Length: 169
Ligand code: ADP
Image (cartoon, rainbow, N blue to C red; front, side):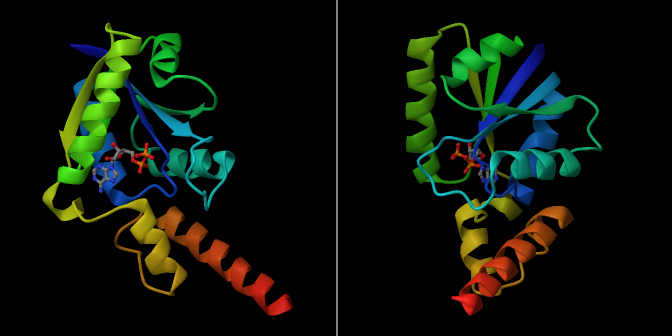
């Protein structure tokens, strides 16, 4: 029924929870765009190109998925531009519920034609967030079972570069 869907997010970094949502949405829609937000208020660990490349690597097994950049503008406008009638978001807990409900309602006011579909996070990924991953990795924790392999490698490189910068200063 869903021809094209768009999954917008910060993906800083992509986690196994995101991947789970992507794989499930790619079964619901004929085609799925992953839109990587680059101008959020959040402080990013990875820049747009790095995030796009990491998501491309982690989704290369999915033929009906492509990654696009979401720079300035409304998500519903981007959806319209690429011909997507559905937005996909994930829901982990009550906090997400409040947030996602408001975003979905606001998006409706901007374009009533575009529906939001919320997928419940899988049980094993409910605790997983990009910010927690960054925090644990920053303090040297092992996140290899929580993010795709290339993301794990990229995080390690980032934080070892930071340590090197610290030593220099
Ligand atoms: P944003 O800044 O737009 O919330 P995120 O990358 O943090 O971007 O999240 C993108 C979407 O993925 C959100 O709808 C979020 O609820 C969902 N999400 C985040 N982590 C998980 C997870 N572990 N399992 C399922 N969905 C998730």
